[in-house]
Length: 193
Image (cartoon, rainbow, N blue to C red; front, side):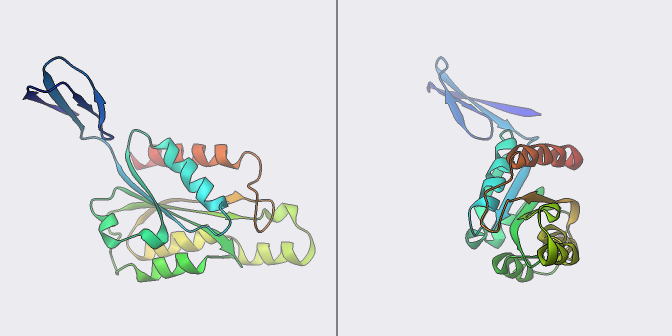
């Protein structure tokens, strides 16, 4: 539902949650979209691959109020009135990065109550490795399930956890993973509503 306010003696039209300005004749109409979701995407990235995935997820939410934050810039005030928290990290030894582990452990107990959440990671696909590396990946798994569990323990309702694949430790992303992340982000929005 949208709310409009008429203001006199101005020549701009303030439109949607991003506040794009459009000219009108002699008045300001303020359009505030009250049905948008407040989404925070917080991520850690060592080689840029997780950052690319986080950015592609944010691109899907153009009609929502979305913040994309590298986790060292996260503050607890970012959780205020949040509808959806998406946390992402590279996988290292089957676990999230140290930065993501620190972030998750620093969240106050219960701070994610009534918040929907999702987790993602970037990792090497098990089927493309052989021998010992393949065994380690199968045994340890990927970071997203650990992130999801930590979010859940803090009170969040976890909607999904997903791994996006890189070709090697430093990347690059496997072909098609950016597009797959956008599909996943769109599916999250459908689950949230």
